[in-house]
Image 1 (cartoon, rainbow, N blue to C red):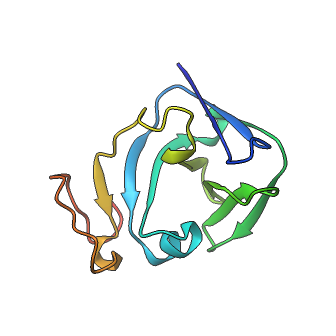
Image 2: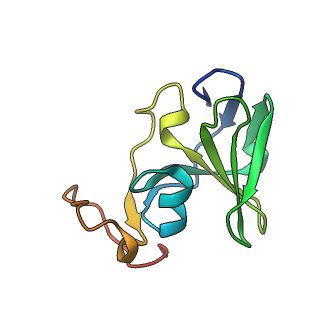
Image 3: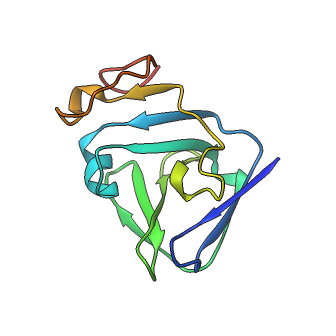
Length: 129
């Protein structure tokens, strides 16, 4: 199965082939700052399953991750692992934003105090196992 998505202005489009490895919501401080929101809801794909068209920029947000965004409108699209072969794709960037449902929350030790997690999903203080 192929799922497609892109940025706000349409300058960047992507395709994801197959199913994600996992779908999680990350509440870590780096994701909060990088996304400009309380958390980063993402589907994790092998980088080889993704094709990207259009000009993107990268910001090295940590030793492990580059944040990939549209150079035109600034939409944050991916958390691209520098070590390993995975990339987190922002759920809201998919054309069908309801295609995937998260299965758990990670880094809840850093979640914003006013965020209430009442969805019944497993919560992990740090990274998920």
